Amino acid sequence: MTEARATEAAIRLADVHKQFGRRIVLSGVSLELAPGARLGLIGPAASGKSVICKLACGLEQADRGSVDVLGVRLGGKREAELGALRRRIGMLFQNYALFDFLSVERNVAFPLEQRGGMTAGDIASRVAERLRSVGLVGSEHKLTGELSGGMKKRVGIARATVADAEIVIYDEPTAGLDPVTTQKIYDLLAADQARTGATVLAVSSDVVALAKFVDEIAFLYQGRIIYRGPAATIADAPDPLVRQFVRGDLEGPLEDVQQEASA
Amino acid sequence: MKASRLARFVESIGAGATRVAQETGGIVVLTWQVLRALVPPRIDRRELFKNLHKMGNRSVAIVALTAFFAGALMALQSGPFVKKFGATAIAGYGAGYAVLREIGPILIALMFSGRVGANNTAELATMTVTEQLDGLRALSIDPIAYLVVPRVIAMMVMLVALTAIGDLVALVGAAAVARVMLDIEWSTMYYSMADNLKPWDFLLGIYKSVAFGGVIAMSSCYFGVSVRGGAVGVGKAVNAAVVAAAVSIMLLDFLLTYLLG
Image (tube, rainbow over all chains, first blue to last red; front, side):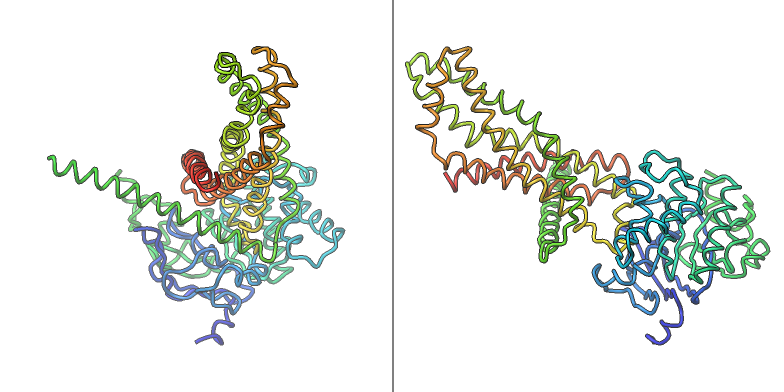
């Protein structure tokens, strides 16, 4: 393979296995994103969606299988070797992962400052533009501890997108946001993606809003991707598991729902 | 029944030994990573100066207070014997000897561990459980070089500085108590110290403070970055760091006193 094949996809996971202690999280995940593609990843809670995001960013290593990102095979790479690749990836963490020792403004400026190559003036204007686009004008000098959950999420989005990365990974970009803000955020993400042409991997529990943003949706269940299809028709997917999950039905083949209902 | 109880006892000892070995190994690995980050030096100056100020400047008052009373206690405890044997000429020497070599470095290190080390563990542990360390890694920044190295340097430098300041304050405390409560002249205490104490007495305490600073820094950083779980994990990490530092300080003190005199 495969170096040639790896360069075709922006992100490629092949037969990836991952477990933490005795808990098997991923058991043979294969997933491929073409450059510029927008893929949504859905699945029950604790099904391993965030783990896939971290694998794609090199923050976790697969126990078995291969992960290729932008033509680079991540397996066995040391932290120092992953640095150059990570500069080409933007990531929004589920729990924000904002630096609480820095102000909002410096959080967003941080990736640009660390990468170098920009003047202080350029960084300041870029940060101001990002903060304006996520509606955080006036909060520049606040510490992240002073922000609400929704504001933190928006700071995280501004930080993930400030450097115009080639791949952007959003882990629950709209969790905890009201419907109007959710739509605003997705409009912003879509406009950003259209401008930069970045490859997008987005994890969200809000399937309806996610489906408007991405082209395709993949369903992760019991450690595997069991369905992948067009986002627009996800509610009518041929797989009954996916249909039940998207529609939120209590009756159906999803084992987790059955167990929770009987508990 | 007895056999199973014995088995459980042996098992618990084994589990405890394994945990200690894991933690010691983890601290050694982190120490190696810190040393590697220093060659060539990759230190964020802003982080370093912030930590020097936070850990050092803000600890001066509490360290001075502790040291003053440590010195005062030395004079107070030895006072009755000094008076009884008419040995006021060596009152300052006795208090100074104990303060410079043992009491000063140990008390200040324990105070530093409780104040700065615990705070450092809590900060790093909170950053770990809120994925801030992963956030740094995602931005291709090494959390060890960016967060841990400046803290280790700041703690080691500042504990030495605080010990030197504390030594001086403790000697003043001893002299003050000797004057006020034991009626020994300032000059008697001064000459007793100046004539009898040797530079080595002071240096030994300083060498000890370097070692104590190292173990406080490494244990507080290790338990901070290796934390698991949420708020409960943070609490356990702080507790483990303070206990590990206190035990290491006593152990190191014994070893250094035995080896260096």
